[in-house]
Image 1: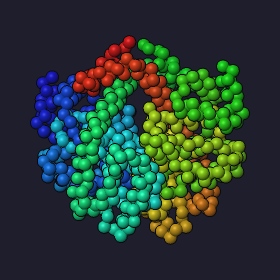
Image 2 (image 1 turned 120 degrees about the horizontal axis):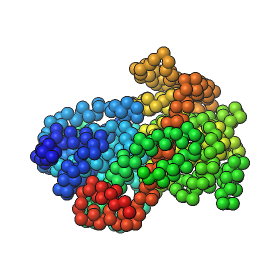
Image 3 (image 1 turned 180 degrees about the vertical axis):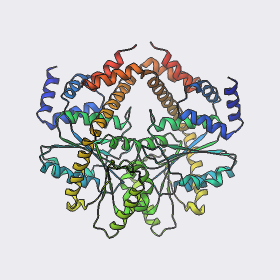
Image 4 (image 1 turned 45 degrees about the vertical axis):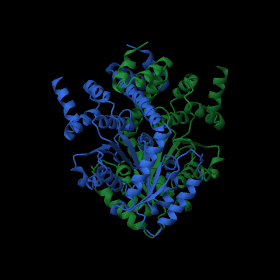
Length: 311
Length: 311
């Protein structure tokens, strides 16, 4: 109990190493954590969540890096949760992009967490939600989720954000047509990065026409397209202002509160499901499953059998 | 019961409309189906599963189309499960690619099923597995899964395949570096499509060097790179031969049987979890969840409370 209390205190005092250790335990489903997590989350601190997604090569990490700096200048503490594309087999993550963030990593008001997309039971979105909860409780003002691509898990992660930024580059053009079907509707803000390229105006225009096809009411948020050259910090203050405007919009319509309620509800549902699975799959049930499969019993019958066998 | 029997018989007789109707019920979690699915799956027919993935624009649909024709020539019946990128909100799918498959759709030995990536409880991979089970039981020899991108769900889907094909195009080059981290290790066969482009040899060489970095034993499968121009049918017979060679390799090493066992086990685990969730979330538990959230109780405590409250 002493150890737990001291870890709790350390995290409250901004000890990043203690926070990182706790998060690793969270990611590994360490059951003994429930009391400390309950205490931590009872603090009920609120962080503003920003999701950044887009195709590989859109410069998401550089944008994230620049946003971190902008929020630091505005006296906010920032945590980044970076979800790396990874092998489903080795669980290894591409660290190249992370290394570029070195200059912000030494700042005590910045916390960076990489999550590999290895297929954990219950899924990455749940883990990312859990990790962000703990980071929120540790007192960070802003949480930035950075993910690649348009997989369902990645979409689930950015959907958990208050403001979702979709980053594109001029040359994404054709090849992202298909992706856009998914990205179009989750974007609260579009960023056309590398906007110093000659074809960027054309790409912005194409994006604008697509946006105009969306349903609008007088009341709805008009998705802006922000042009940036993130490597040189160009357009970052516009992006910062657009995020603030979107946050203000959400608050004024009561939507921020609603988003948080939905997120809370889904989070508990996931926790319940994961917790249940860990207790359900006893050795005897696992053995029964394998035995019935070897007898060529139908999967549906086996599932029923396992669930009706309550002891 | 009569209706169920007749649907069952129709499917056994190759009635595609009856199969499509059953699959829609499966996708909508129709509980009343359990008996008919159990009967159907007890037939224990086996289909060979091929997964095709790769970045948008790599020509996956055209490749699929060509493979379907090749298998039809070899007297095999083929089903295609196409997982379309889609909006998480509208659930609408991009149908353009599907339309191109018109010429094979009229063939009675071909069955095509589009699945939208809308966020169903339990996830897309489970649904795709379930759909493929039913299609297998209906007697198709070959099942081709076609998915876009490298999201976790999409990777889970192709991991369920016996042979996984990763399709690339010369111009994917840089932008897929990040993707490749995920795609590299799931590929049993690489396809360099649109290989008539001038830069295709360079792209193949780059891919070859990356492949040489992988660990090999004398016993392991050497991932081939097949050059195709799928729009003109070039290289399709090579691809067909490579799939056959990989299937032969899997069988000779006992790996096909092992893959099927793992797949069966995971499928039952998913069914159990989905079935449990549907019975667990009674109205009173849902009400309790919302009440506790409004009292700012910690999500972890609420989850414990819900699970301990067994009646």
